[in-house]
Image 1 (cartoon, rainbow, N blue to C red):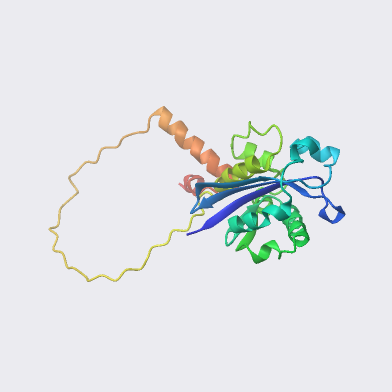
Image 2: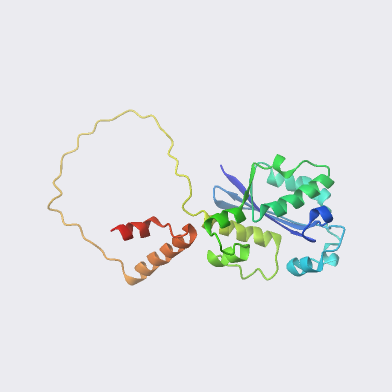
Length: 237
């Protein structure tokens, strides 16, 4: 079983070393490339105000966060949810830096001690689409992920969008593994049949089927950077 958690935070600013804190955490669980339905969504009282520019991004005011728990109060709940999973984050260094700073304040170990590993989808996107914009918004547009509900950044919403983006970026990379099985050989006697006189019907695709096929190929072209095998086979035919 492969367990992955898509993770995002919203913060009071850009630098945990200067006292900026986490105000929101969103986690979305996926098991074997399928959303499990399990999520974790936390609002946190950071004990300080957000920078004006950060407030424009997430919209979480001091008044809204005043009665929310401190990070230390929910640290164990968060770690229990993340424990043993592959953590998938867009621009992972930013979020991991903030979480590690919060864990240090709560006298807990680093995030790397809890999760199986951290995967950065920003690094993946830069490898797939060099020289292009690779923000989460840009990837949603490129991979046709519906992000119309994203009027403000929200940690749980962004984690869900990241899960959709990740699935589309990694389409076709599933590992196909066949279990080796020991079986007793059975000898079958099959009568030979002459197929030379059999005419097989050829059914041409209708226009709608052709367009659906082309749409799928366009999506594969975009996701693979123009490396779709079907296109290559057509070019060589």
